[in-house]
Length: 97
Image 1 (cartoon, one colour):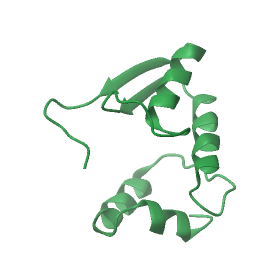
Image 2: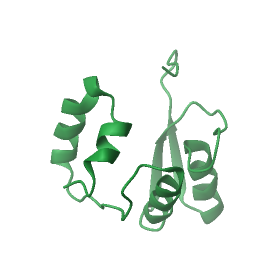
Image 3: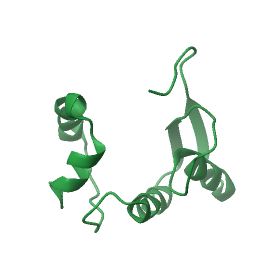
Image 4: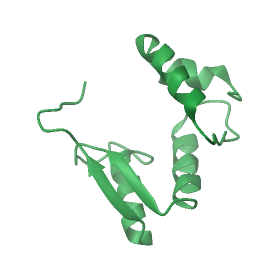
């Protein structure tokens, strides 16, 4: 399914890999981007593709600005600019790990 296992292996922590694979297996539709590595450009392109195909964005986000392009803050901002409805989920007491 993955165009390159490198992306999965570099972006998914080893202790989350099994759960990631289970969730991916439940997906109705998976879009695989044409990138060999999970780079910032790949994230920006994936965000663009996603925003172009959704009516609503549900973001798990702490409300903090992104360090660079392609992060959650940028995609939330761009969704709002495009008029895409945005729902932010951040459980009370949650922290970045």
